[in-house]
Image (cartoon, rainbow, N blue to C red; front, side, top):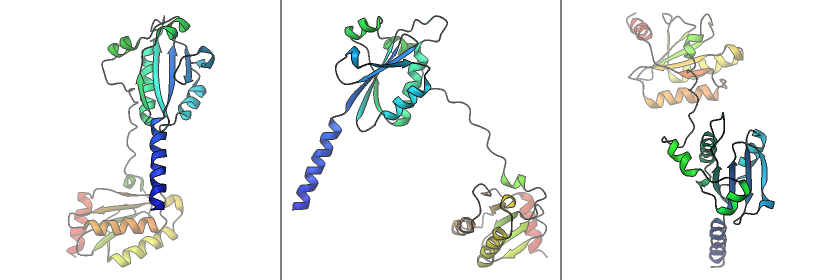
Length: 256
C-alpha cells in the first residue's frame, strides 16, 4: 500500500508538471530582428534580441526549447521588406524546425502593447494566406542512391558473392566471374565468410548476398547475421537482386 501511495504522489507530481508549461514568445520582427522572452505578460525589459541571420543565436534558442516544458508562440511582424522576400519564408522555416523537434507551437497575432513597442503589427493572416501550401520548407532533392556494391567489384578477386537457394544449398563465387561456382551448406558457408573477412584487407572486403525465389527468409537472415558477426565493415556488404547471368550459372552448375 505504501508503494502504491508513493506511485500516486509521483503521478500527481508528473501531471502537475505537464500542466505547467512555460510560454516562449518568439518575435520575427521588422524583417531583420528576432526577439524572445519567456512568460505570460509582455515586458520590453525581458526581451532578448539578435539579428535574424545570426545562425548561432538561432541554434542556441532552438536547443534551449524543451518539448516537455515549453509552448511556443511564433509572432511574425510586418512583411514590408524592400528588396526582400519578407518574413513569410522565415516564419515557415521556424515552423518546419519546431515540427522536427516535436515542439508544441502556434502562430499568434500580437496585442496593442507589442504593436506599439515594435512599431508594427502582426502579419499572421497575410503570411498564411500568401502561402497556400502546407507550412513546410521545401527540402533539397535527395542525393542519387549509391551504385550497387556489386558494380564496385571490378578486378577484386577477394570479393565474395553468395547465391542463396532452397534446400540448404548455397553457392558462392569470387570476383566477378560466376561461371566458377562453389556449392556449400550453411555451416561451410559461415566458415567461408569468416575466413574471407579475416584474410582480406578491410578496404578490399566486399560481400554481396543474392537469393533465388526458392531461398527461405530464415536462410537469408542466417547469412546476414553471420556477415555482421564476422566483423564485415558497414557499407562493405549488401543484399542485391540476383541477375539472369547468375541464374544461368546455377543452372549450368546443376547440369554438369
